[in-house]
Length: 110
Image (cartoon, rainbow, N blue to C red; front, top):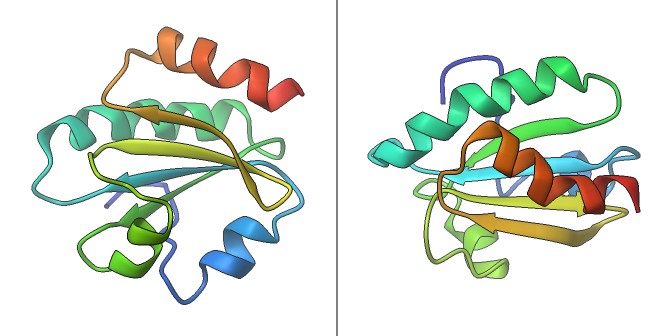
C-alpha cells in the first residue's frame, strides 16, 4: 500500500516481524479492500506517534498468501500485533483509532 507503512512479504516476515526487538503491528490487507483503505491512515498516525516503540507494517494478502494462510487470516483488514515472535493480539475489521488503540494497548504494555 502506498504511504509510510513499510511492506513485509512471505520472504522477509520472519526477519522483519518475528525477530523484531520491538512489537510489530501487521496490517493484512489487499488493494481491492475498501475498509483496508480506511484503516491505513490510522495506522500511519500510530506509526508516527509511537515511532521507536512500535513498528507498523503492511502485508498484501494477495501477493503473500503463505503468511496469510499461516496466521489464518480469513477476513481483511486483519491487524495482528506480534511481540517476541508470537501473536499477542488480533483485531479484525476497520475500527476507529481510539477503539483500535484501546484494543491494542493491553498487549503493548504486557
